Length: 574
Ligand SMILES: Cc1ncc(C[n+]2csc(CCOP(=O)(O)OP(=O)(O)O)c2C)c(N)n1
Ligand SMILES: [Mg+2]
Image (tube, rainbow, N blue to C red):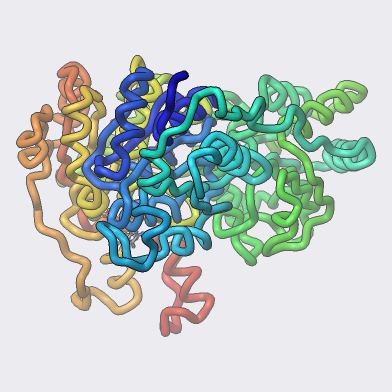
């Protein structure tokens, strides 16, 4: 009769759930897990900080649509992972964090890497946090953790395996394996709700669809494209759902912030909005009406009923999975002839191209120091339809949002509601592990690159040829510009950075390195980096004086809300 230890059961259960990889950083509490994972041929990406391991597990879910897994050691490992978990929690991303712990029966005895309640610490920032009490419970608690992470509104979960459970042994024959992880069906809308939605959309003059991560994490198949094309409704997305409609599709209007531009350009805002799996927060205009006009009819579809109506009154709230909703809408839409909305489509398209037009002159002029939009545009032009872009930083990520072209779901990994700097490199690592044949470009600010700089080492050791482009403006740009706008130039504090040679530092890890000052060298340097076959750091010196329209909008919004102590509002657009 064979015996299995707790680590082996945990690995076997992950495998039964279709998971064969995780992100980690070693700790002796976990060795039974690592040994079993090696035996089972798991892909283990060992990183240089548990924050990065948690962020990579999050990035895995964002790029594959499937839950990511991070395995971190007791005490400092779990504490370090916390910030990555918070980011996933705030963005409703499914991931499983497995944490080591001292012996369960030695609580409160100051054992190695102990001394605090890890489960209690994780509880408020996860959907579910639990300790496995004994080896017999390993399989069903892993299944429970994964079911909770992936069902309903997704989110991170924390499962703790104390060292005495991880190394305990039991007879193989006594192990009870759960047959299934989750349910077969997903919530479907009622016929009446679908009919009302179709009525409103059909009679609308300026309808739009707004996508969020709920659309990405449900199985849309071709339903979204079919529905948008049949009904000729333009599609906007937040950064978790870019690419579900390809950038070159005539109905793709890219970022939801372009809805605000529509209003400002006085073309009239949308009159009916179909919100699919996007929560109502800053990225839909918050409690203001800048993106979703007051008189617009809102149809909000969400897999989590408690999300419906957050921040705004909703005219029709539908508790359903986005894929199921689109399937039902499509079936009903077939029975009608739909208006063409040609003028409206042209107006939405123009709004989505406005930043390209606005900064196009800069591209022609190609001045030194390089304009950040010129950098963003060069990266987007160098990328192929298959390239995955991981974007991180203040102004940097906003320039990328303005220039970005995304053609597939899971190919744009960026900030969400937490706006956590430092996610870019771990997200890029996850994307490269998940898609070894695709190219991954990480674009981040010189501030953002510092949070997980040692991950260049992970890229080199694991032969992950990610291209990391640093937008080096020598400052915490968004912060510095905010201070200039609010307190006047010459009054900055704690927002300067040095003109660091990040390329030379990355070369020390074994990366291909490029230092770019002239605009004419930008595309050649990116191409050399891509051709090197190695992880690369392309350090680009950019103009520190250019303020992003997003920074202006944020400062303007804060000022309007009376949060800056400033009487005059800075202008939204330069
Ligand atoms: C972890 C974290 N710390 C601090 C902030 C606050 N913050 C927002 S933008 C910003 C400046 C970012 O600078 P950089 O990465 O260089 O990008 P840039 O704005 O210069 O393009 C800071 C510090 C944050 N969002 N996340
Ligand atoms: Mg910067």
